[in-house]
Length: 112
Length: 117
Figure 1: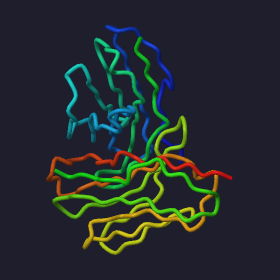
Figure 2: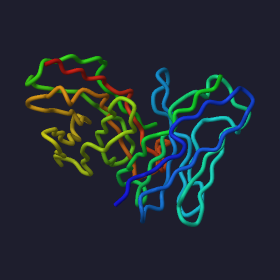
Figure 3: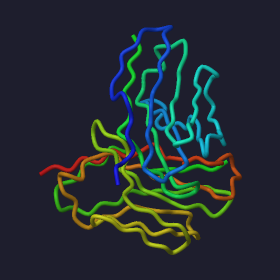
């Protein structure tokens, strides 16, 4: 089975711009989660989707949003980028919570 | 709420040394426990898991036992290799949904392991 794929792998954006990141889960997995990883804050939960429904959202401002499509693929969007949004954004898929999550390679976002 | 505490790193060992990375947790329900590993420039890989008390997860020579009485899930390996150099994360999922852990993994801060030849 193919693993979780994320595109793009690297992004450089300017403050104030917006960005969309994409995640394709493992075939058959209906749960997709997003995490932000930074050296200072570690791994922080952004949100989780199951069958196109957001079931939980982390403590992030409204500039961070996401969605899931009927084929379980997911996107996350960050509007009005700030320097502090520079991070590795990780997507993970699972058959359902609380089973193990499988992570993609991440998208490295740099905001200048 | 739920939380995971890992030993502070970094940990530096010589090849073939014994490894222990301590992990303790706080959870309101009966969590599942995981160890993930992250190699430089990559995402997280599931290393092993345990879903109930006294379960032992094992993979690639690594082991961890789910100890409910001590709320611990320590990672061990008898003989580390240079290729084991990475960051290791302990994590839990809580099916009870209480403690603010609905539908998310709660991670420790990670422990950087460096193995020298």
